[in-house]
Image (cartoon, rainbow, N blue to C red; front, side, top):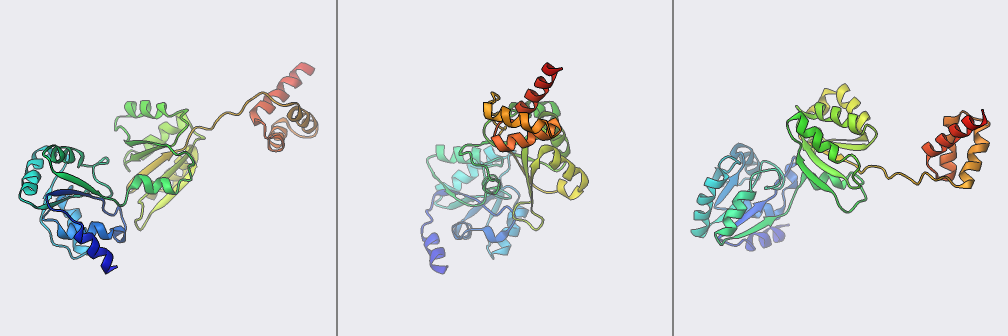
Amino acid sequence: MQAHYQKAVASIVPQTLYVVATPIGNLADLSFHALAVLSRADLICAEDTRVTQQLLRAYGVSARLISVREQNEQSMAERVIAALAAGQVVAQVSDAGTPAVCDPGARLVTRVRAAGYQVLPVAGPSAVMTALSVAGVTQSDFYFAGFLPAKSGERHQKLQLWKEVSYPVVMFETPHRITDTLAQMVLLYPQRTLMLAREISKTHETYLCDTVSEIQSIVQADANQKRGEMVLILYPAPVEKNTELSAEAINIMQILVQELPTKQAAVLAAQISGENRKALYDWAINAKKLSE
């Protein structure tokens, strides 16, 4: 382990801004590379210096911290560029996870690169990729929506865009809006599969995966599910099967409907034939009407 750490230390280059991913919960997720950069950095740009100080203390790191937030990112860039010009090593971190993804950092990176200095990433924890890794989605592409809009009307418009998409949608949501967001989702697609990943890698981490309607019921029944950092993964809309029934499926349905209620017969016929359950049910209803 020591050899890997020393190799990471030796690779650090002066006059470079390192964008460092930090743990999103479990402090043990900090990599050797990240620890080496934070230990070597002459200046660390933190979203909230108090939060970053807790991480540094846990690893016995003493460093000069400055607060670089969304509100002052442009102005603090000059200070960072001056430090790089003086030959220093500068690290950029957010409160948790990978900086510049729904967190400060993008403007700083742009300004530093425009000034002619190198910007290098230090890979590590990401709430988006961590949640996706346990979601079981098989599509190779996905859409990352960031934080959903705070205003109800704008949020509804956004959610409506994903009513029939063929790819998973990953989004962040806050505890005080999760109830309203689930209520809007239920109106649009109650039976779509949804994962609510909460407090990832922390003590109370939870992964709920069910229909939107069922997730809403769970959250309503348990106030704890409204707490902490949240990632939502809306699974792709189900692909509608061809509703043109085969002769074999119709024959199976004709036999079953004589012995079973129509709805139950349609379920069983769909399981046997692999055909669309609703199409089988509709066929039986229409056949019954024609015979009357």
